[in-house]
Length: 131
Image (cartoon, rainbow, N blue to C red; front, top):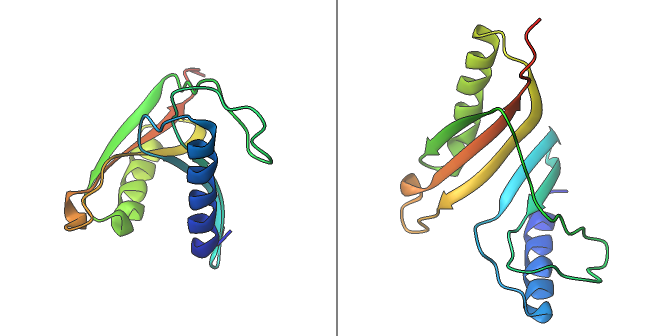
Protein backbone atom coordinates (compact mmCIF):
# COMPACT_ATOMS: atom_id res chain seq x y z
CA UNK A 1 0.00 0.00 0.00
CA UNK A 2 1.08 3.57 -0.48
CA UNK A 3 0.58 6.63 1.77
CA UNK A 4 -2.86 7.43 0.35
CA UNK A 5 -4.05 3.86 0.96
CA UNK A 6 -2.71 3.95 4.52
CA UNK A 7 -4.74 7.10 5.19
CA UNK A 8 -7.85 5.52 3.62
CA UNK A 9 -7.48 2.35 5.71
CA UNK A 10 -6.98 4.45 8.86
CA UNK A 11 -10.26 6.28 8.23
CA UNK A 12 -12.03 2.99 7.50
CA UNK A 13 -10.76 1.49 10.76
CA UNK A 14 -11.88 4.60 12.68
CA UNK A 15 -15.36 4.19 11.20
CA UNK A 16 -15.53 0.48 12.10
CA UNK A 17 -14.43 1.22 15.67
CA UNK A 18 -16.98 4.03 16.06
CA UNK A 19 -19.86 1.97 14.61
CA UNK A 20 -19.06 -0.94 16.92
CA UNK A 21 -19.28 1.22 20.04
CA UNK A 22 -15.64 0.48 20.89
CA UNK A 23 -13.21 3.21 21.86
CA UNK A 24 -9.53 3.66 21.08
CA UNK A 25 -7.40 3.28 24.21
CA UNK A 26 -4.06 4.22 22.74
CA UNK A 27 -2.22 5.45 19.71
CA UNK A 28 -1.81 3.24 16.65
CA UNK A 29 1.06 0.78 16.45
CA UNK A 30 2.62 0.19 13.07
CA UNK A 31 4.93 -2.46 11.68
CA UNK A 32 6.60 -2.12 8.30
CA UNK A 33 7.71 -5.41 6.78
CA UNK A 34 9.12 -3.96 3.58
CA UNK A 35 9.22 -0.97 1.25
CA UNK A 36 9.55 -1.13 -2.50
CA UNK A 37 9.44 2.25 -4.20
CA UNK A 38 6.31 3.99 -2.89
CA UNK A 39 4.65 0.72 -1.86
CA UNK A 40 4.78 -0.53 1.74
CA UNK A 41 3.98 -3.89 3.27
CA UNK A 42 2.78 -2.90 6.70
CA UNK A 43 0.47 -3.72 9.58
CA UNK A 44 -1.49 -1.15 11.59
CA UNK A 45 -2.68 -2.07 15.09
CA UNK A 46 -5.17 0.11 16.96
CA UNK A 47 -5.68 -0.57 20.69
CA UNK A 48 -9.41 -0.63 21.57
CA UNK A 49 -11.38 -1.26 24.75
CA UNK A 50 -13.42 -4.29 23.63
CA UNK A 51 -13.57 -7.06 21.06
CA UNK A 52 -15.26 -6.26 17.76
CA UNK A 53 -17.09 -8.98 15.82
CA UNK A 54 -17.61 -9.05 12.04
CA UNK A 55 -14.91 -6.59 11.05
CA UNK A 56 -14.84 -7.51 7.36
CA UNK A 57 -11.30 -8.27 6.16
CA UNK A 58 -9.53 -7.01 9.30
CA UNK A 59 -8.45 -9.13 12.25
CA UNK A 60 -8.94 -8.68 15.99
CA UNK A 61 -5.89 -9.55 18.10
CA UNK A 62 -6.73 -10.25 21.72
CA UNK A 63 -3.24 -9.21 22.87
CA UNK A 64 0.23 -8.49 21.61
CA UNK A 65 3.22 -9.72 23.56
CA UNK A 66 6.87 -9.20 22.68
CA UNK A 67 9.37 -10.75 25.06
CA UNK A 68 13.07 -10.01 25.35
CA UNK A 69 12.76 -6.82 23.34
CA UNK A 70 15.01 -3.88 22.68
CA UNK A 71 13.25 -0.57 23.32
CA UNK A 72 14.43 2.40 21.31
CA UNK A 73 12.94 5.84 22.00
CA UNK A 74 12.75 8.23 19.06
CA UNK A 75 12.02 11.87 19.82
CA UNK A 76 11.71 14.17 16.84
CA UNK A 77 10.21 14.35 13.41
CA UNK A 78 8.76 10.95 12.38
CA UNK A 79 10.36 11.45 8.97
CA UNK A 80 13.72 10.90 10.71
CA UNK A 81 12.68 7.56 12.25
CA UNK A 82 14.84 5.74 9.68
CA UNK A 83 17.92 7.25 11.35
CA UNK A 84 16.82 5.68 14.65
CA UNK A 85 16.39 2.32 12.91
CA UNK A 86 19.86 2.64 11.39
CA UNK A 87 21.32 3.27 14.86
CA UNK A 88 19.52 0.31 16.46
CA UNK A 89 20.50 -1.97 13.57
CA UNK A 90 24.14 -0.94 14.11
CA UNK A 91 23.74 -1.76 17.83
CA UNK A 92 22.21 -5.16 16.99
CA UNK A 93 25.07 -6.07 14.64
CA UNK A 94 27.75 -4.70 16.98
CA UNK A 95 26.40 -6.81 19.87
CA UNK A 96 25.74 -9.99 17.84
CA UNK A 97 22.03 -9.92 18.64
CA UNK A 98 19.43 -11.79 16.58
CA UNK A 99 16.15 -9.95 15.95
CA UNK A 100 13.10 -12.21 15.85
CA UNK A 101 10.46 -9.55 15.15
CA UNK A 102 10.27 -6.46 13.00
CA UNK A 103 10.23 -3.09 14.75
CA UNK A 104 6.85 -2.27 16.31
CA UNK A 105 6.42 1.52 16.28
CA UNK A 106 4.30 2.76 19.17
CA UNK A 107 3.50 6.45 18.92
CA UNK A 108 3.53 7.86 22.46
CA UNK A 109 2.96 11.54 21.70
CA UNK A 110 2.11 13.44 18.54
CA UNK A 111 2.54 17.18 18.35
CA UNK A 112 0.99 18.30 15.04
CA UNK A 113 2.18 21.87 15.64
CA UNK A 114 5.82 20.93 16.25
CA UNK A 115 6.67 17.48 14.86
CA UNK A 116 10.04 17.65 16.67
CA UNK A 117 8.12 16.93 19.91
CA UNK A 118 6.73 13.62 18.59
CA UNK A 119 7.78 10.53 20.57
CA UNK A 120 7.80 7.05 19.07
CA UNK A 121 8.92 3.92 20.91
CA UNK A 122 10.24 1.06 18.79
CA UNK A 123 10.18 -2.49 20.18
CA UNK A 124 12.24 -5.22 18.49
CA UNK A 125 12.07 -8.77 19.80
CA UNK A 126 15.55 -10.27 20.26
CA UNK A 127 16.27 -14.00 20.41
CA UNK A 128 17.15 -15.06 23.97
CA UNK A 129 19.14 -18.01 22.59
CA UNK A 130 22.89 -18.05 23.20
CA UNK A 131 24.88 -20.17 20.80
